[in-house]
Image (cartoon, rainbow, N blue to C red; front, top):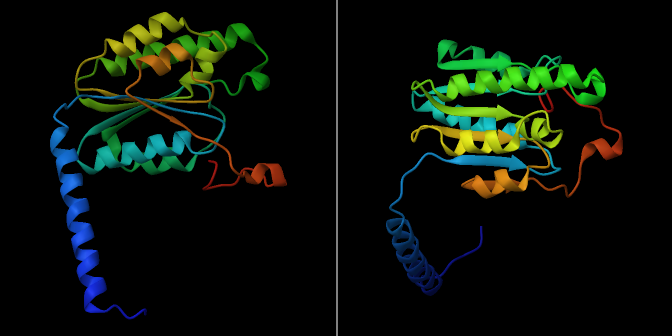
Length: 204
């Protein structure tokens, strides 16, 4: 361990005291409390993973969480099994037919997206739900399976105490504009490019 003399200790204490004063003032200046519309998008890994991290945090406070999956349908996932342990505190609907290149059926894809959106609207109206994850909704919007204007209007007009997280690549500009928080997941390095396949506990 590096030796620290009294002068170094005092300089550090003074520096951190100033930093704390700045941080405390910044925190005190934040006075708005509101439910958020959050968008996780971008080409990098972690969009859905981050959304489920928020779901777990909300569950830790005794709240109820809803999940509607718009595209994923055929894969068995560890997260679904894990959240099942919370019983009826998690309302989970996997309503996708799989990725569009798998179904190769436009009418079927649109019908599945419309059914998933109808379920999303139902959960948005449920006052017991504190957080709603709309997984891969961005993909359904990207391929025009749903009316973008209607979706954005419904999300903006949701009840005031409902947090919503939308995931998926290529978020539409109108949704980005409507959101309170947008995170773009970038790719610095990805194991897929090195030939590593999707793995249990990491991708699903």
